[in-house]
Each structure stands twice: as C-alpha cells, then as structure tokens.
Image 1 (cartoon, rainbow, N blue to C red):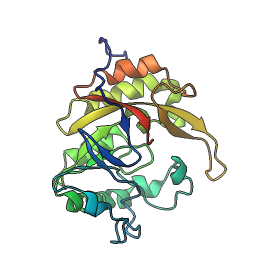
Image 2: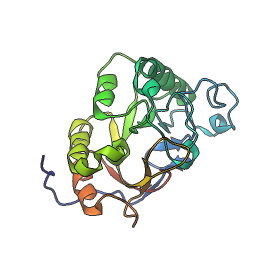
Image 3: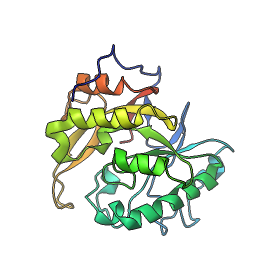
Image 4: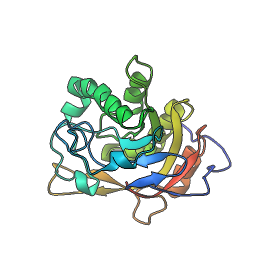
Length: 225
C-alpha cells in the first residue's frame, strides 16, 4: 500500500496538550478509565471536574479498558482479551452514555490499540451501529502495536483511509511512539510520544504525510499521550 501523496498536514495554529484542562476547539480533557464502573469518575466520587464543565462542552477521553492495567498511569497498556471481547463490546455503550451525561453532547473518544476502541474495524462497527453516538479524535499511531511496527506505514494508511474522512472524526493527531519493555507487563508495548520526539520509532515525515491526507483538522500532540 502506498502513502497518499499530498503537500503536508494542515496543522492547526495551536498544538494540543491532552493531559487535562480545556482544549480550545475540542473540549475538556477527562483523565482516567471511564470503562471501570468502580472508578471515582464513574461512581460519583470524581474530583469536581463536572462542576468545571460548561453545558454543551464536549469531553475528550480514552475509550477505556477492562481489567487491571498496572502501568496505565505511565501510558502503557497490555493486551487484554477481556477488553477486545464481548465484555468490552457490552461495556462501550455505558462509557458513551456516562460521558454524554456529564456534558449533554456526544463525547470525543481517543482510540488505542489496547482499549475498547482498539482498531479501525472496531471503530467503524460502533460508529455504524445503533448504539449511543460518539465522535473520534483519531490517533493512527495509538492504534499500532509493537508487532505492527515493521508494516507501520500500511497500518497508518488504513486507519486514515477508514476513519479520516468520517463526519464523526473531529480531528487527527500527529504523534510518535517508542517501544518499552516494562517489568509490570508481559512483553514490550508502545508508549505514545509527542510528535517529532527524537526517541520515536516512527519517521516523522511519514506520519505527517499520512495524517495530512485525512479530511479533518490535524493537531500536533505535545503532551498527554
């Protein structure tokens, strides 16, 4: 598969920090795992973020995961059949409903290879289904796994071709990733990095060309992976 030819990404004037607070043009970033019914955010024991939300202000959040993830606080998640399987599919509508209740508008979710929105096929199935409505902040790099790195170009192109032109995609992220072997996990995993980071395993120009072909605004991830 060839990389789409184009003149470069349409990067917005501002870069994006996704580790909390309000992002102009997107919404308010909510941390945590909203797929966990026992988490403070889901159990009504939050830190007061609800009070900060303006009515109609979208929330931006991970789609979440099931089960224990001991390295999630460091931006690392292990493969989880529970998350990918029927239990994950059943949990996803509850995540969307929970986040919609907090702002009264469809939430903006970030896919990740180890989360409920794990790949383009899962994203398309849920976008085309009859469940509660949500939107995407697409990060093609976040949907890579270590095994995909040798064919990263093909996987990135497929993600952008499948989701970059969807009406529900509010933006596409430029980011990087590095392979990390953490003793808390059973094998190497990818940690997201700011776009252009010197440790990224991905060619910056390649990512820019692929992401720039999306029919959506392009944002440059600076922090919050």
